[in-house]
Image (cartoon, rainbow, N blue to C red; front, side, top):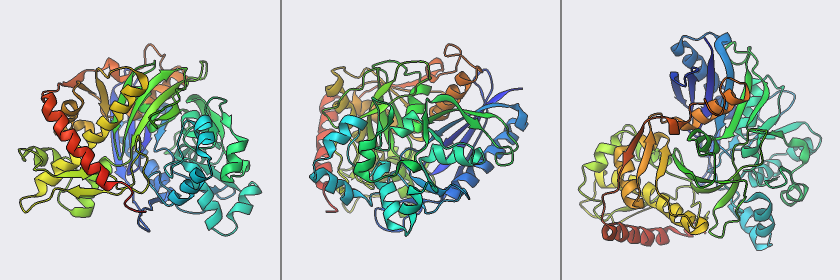
Length: 497
């Protein structure tokens, strides 16, 4: 027997899948890890806990598949992007908590750089905007806020990485300090056209080059797993991509014009643009797409919604009005309409196309008759409204009308959300039989890099059966709901100034 092990290291948990040569999922295991909120707007992870959860989840998946360690042909990794880890090269231990992509502590630093006129330079080189979402200001904050770290970094004693780099360092026993191009492209330090770390950007953010990993294509043998670390597995880590680019690849969106949306902790809409890095006028992101190593650079347009699944988690953990995420489907459907209640999911600010780090969450339209059902419905509907924000911007940017949207991630299993999403967009929504398209993309990259599959035989999601949701809402009703949403959105802007 021979399998691909796919590690999908997300924001709130780690999923490990075992794929056989036919592309069938032989095992799937998931474990959550702790979210830390030390101050309002701050979000941290314990990087050591991420390693521990990854290893135990992989072990459980191997056992479920009935696979021995030497049955693993290759390993693929997809990961939460932008989250910043800084560790000691000698010990391999983190020197501070990981700062999560949702964290807003560097909003003021980003505003200062904007006032100094730096955003044009950043946008031209990286395709991104100056926002605390990305890694550079997080890394600079770590180096400046902890005594001695900057001098240690300059001496080459410390290593920086996004979560892909952190996983590979530890899973290879410290042999590989590498990242893939899609993750490098999310740091604000990487020139996506020149395809290298940029000296001018390093000076702008005051980052020493000595901390940076080597950058490789997404389908590449990055290193070999250390069996003493990863459940006895000695196999190449051969496919790595940031979660959203992995999902784009896994959907089979490998050419210009194809698009997908992933509903996870946040939601991310990506449209492949081929070999062209489009400069966005709508403040969408231009980013690197997966590259197989023997082709021209690949690019995508992206719109980010910071809080979607995290808002459902807030209903569970913050308000206690649901016991699990699946409850929201029946709860929302039990309300005949939204009762005039709107939720703006700006719990970590607003991403594209608004880019407001000072926006905050808003629940508006509450009356004496508002209950759990209306609140749950408002939270699910907000995900669809934010997706419409992005699709309208993307249509204006590309000049191409959206004909359908491929969806994946945990939210794609929610029938209420998917139907309302189709109604709000006015186009069909397609959900493949396999929800874990992000992990599938990482598996396909690893399989292609090691000859387990070819591009023609890899089990991309567009080759799987699809569930299709057709829109059935009249245009007048769709527009009325959306205009009311825009009113609520405006009230949440610039709240935390």
